[in-house]
Image (cartoon, rainbow, N blue to C red):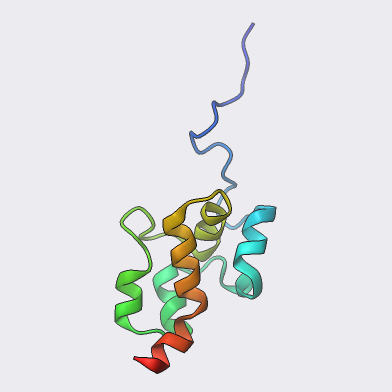
Length: 97
């Protein structure tokens, strides 16, 4: 008997680009309009500085969109959760430093 399902953890459970999971929607909150924007660009657009851009996405998150990071954060990825916090607080931190 052949099953056409992918084993868990191989990326099959992550929705395609532009789609948010239920948990991803909760994590992204009021930034849903930025879900297809690169994370670094979202930080700059929200008033963050270059330091925040370097700090937010770890090596494994570089080049991902805000929506992809939100989905990863919803799955419990600690680096993605930190990146979401930095994206959300970019304006506040950019003004302070």
